[in-house]
Image (cartoon, rainbow, N blue to C red):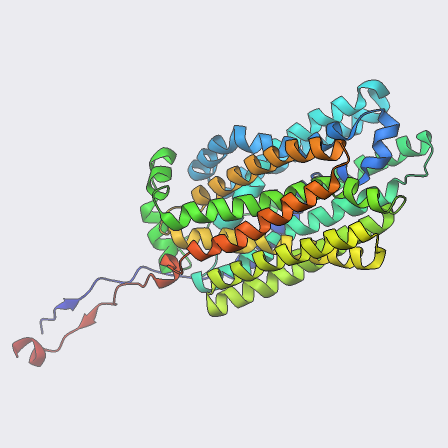
Length: 450
């Protein structure tokens, strides 16, 4: 009996339980990279007198990561697209371990007057690896998880970033104190570098033994389409997405907002200790709780809601609005020198800042589907880095002149403008609305003859 086929065959889709191991490994090695990002700015008031340097030089330990992104992002994208996330991750952990090893030689073998310059060099090496860490979480999740689970999975993966920032605040707290003598600071730095080294090596070993690039079969129809759609040229892929209105709006709104949050993180030590001198331990506690509750708990809760309701525009508006309100309230409490309320609002602001990471990545992938995930995410990170560098220069000038109120008003105005800017976003979720073609259905002879 002859049968005709309606539609095309559905692609072979499979979900592998090993995906949980993949995300776990990414969490581990991304936390090793992010741990290096804020270790020096968080104890700025300890390192300034020890090395006899000004605050702007310490801020470069964080800014060099942004500069590296601008320099190496194109090559990182090309590497990931052609070699896969496993080899990119191996390169990443290898370079991270090299930088950690360089730091071990800093204290005993480099004269003190050159030590901080050497630390900046190691931060540059760390930053090369960090480029890969920051652009691949969405790709790692997309190639292993079904589309309807990717917001939650990406939230889990980004926990590594926040846990790394948390450890970057805790490690200095364990080894350094503003009341230490010079000899104690020297010993504390050396022990902090030893801890970094063993942590990075352990993270590297997990990648070597447990990390895989991608499953044999895609986990979703959407990922099947992305695999078919991948462009051989990064320039061609970029030109394809740059004409999407929602993409332009998102990279501007999230780029400026996340950049402002990064700048506040850079100057957090200077701002808080200006109003409450001698409160370094309180600042470290606030920072740690912000990363844990905002980066882990709140991000996972947001990822669950996004998977369930897909209301990206609505939650973007809420996050931006509460960032505006929380920063404005915090600035008022700081100016009034109300210690407890200032600490509380700073923690709330930190939690909200951490929540921007996951939703920005997933929203931008939704509106640019079926483009390869790594391209739009990389462009977003470039915009964030440019904004961070630009506002760091502006804020450094203002804060060096003790114009703290001006910094607050400029930040409040920016968050207010970004909140109103969400009006121009749409809810055109291309990825989640994409549906597979019908399966092949045999048609009986009676229907065929009729």
